[in-house]
Length: 194
Image 1: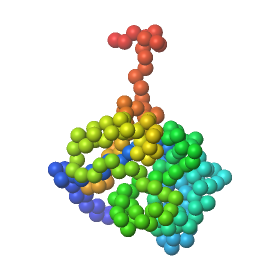
Image 2 (image 1 turned 120 degrees about the vertical axis):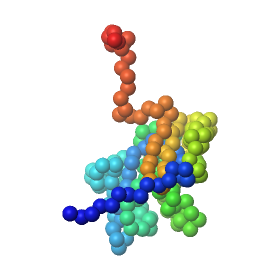
Image 3 (image 1 turned 60 degrees about the vertical axis):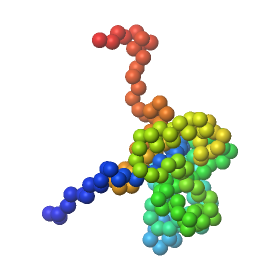
Image 4 (image 1 turned 60 degrees about the horizontal axis):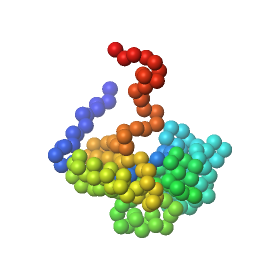
């Protein structure tokens, strides 16, 4: 049997966090092979193609082949959003925003990204973990609208990333998200609670 060591536990007191805007679109990914000569597109849970697409993402990737390959080998996750997808953000086009802010938010990578049709999810805060930072980001989004699509006043919320543990947490307005359980309205159902 192969020995599996217990993972190192990061220290909480020094946790750095990155808070980004949670964009309401559809999760997408691109896998680029080792040689950077070919790629495959996917949604959250399956590989897609132009004949079995997800809101036109595979078609868009095919049309932007050279830019896709310029991302480099490996998996690149992001949000495909805009016209006709979830909230739409008041856009007439669709966009792909990369999630990996720690990779792409440095000057040399930002310059590369500017030469492509990709964007980065908007970074709202980077620093030491604090509940206040999270609340401030939410208040800013509520007051000023989306950073991904300025003038759009119905943003979804934020994603908090803790690099030390590679953990992601979402925090949405009213903590509502599609698919979550909701307390039924017993009065409308004519049912008495105990």
